[in-house]
Image (cartoon, rainbow, N blue to C red):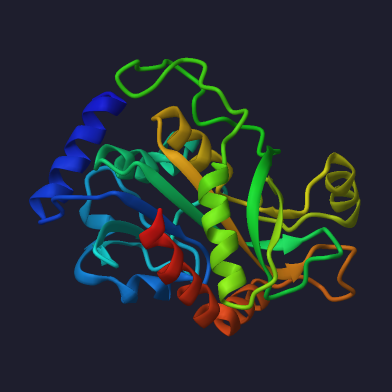
Length: 272
């Protein structure tokens, strides 16, 4: 079965579960999944039930597709993601994103927990992703291309759409949050970066670093969907922080700012 046939099977299954409309897709990163509870008229589908989806193995990722409405707008949410470092092929990692696109979304909001590199970023800050650097060593478009899904050589000169980013920025201002934007660098993980690697990323222009999001953004743009991104700065990157890095700090920080995060998304997504 080729990728197009797999997508058709997954989309058909989800629609048969009662998800008849989707305009905005949202991917919730580590510890940020509670936003899905704010949707009205919810339909919840475990990833394991959806054809060709995989099981999430990382703490802080529930592994559920949640469809509903927010401010009257039909929204479909991935409550957690699986990652390249879990051992999945990169095409498998982005399959859920392709499925959201197949459901008919026109806009996708990607969120993640990230380590802060730019000294202006502190744990608890929310950073609008302005651009990204792919340091994962893989690209989800590698291999045979199916023109029914997207073009062979999609443009990546404006991955993160300015109008959506501006909506998020205005929502931050209205909520009394500092508006911070930057470049997100993705590495394959699962080990955290060394201080030397963080110095390299800073020289390259990265403001924050993580282990996700970039393949998803590429796959969505490949399918013609508009993308925006938000990083929750959960910790300071290696060499910047004097403390050893621990995933527990990620979940603690996201737990501390979850109300601000949920409020921001609740205000901005209906305006997408």
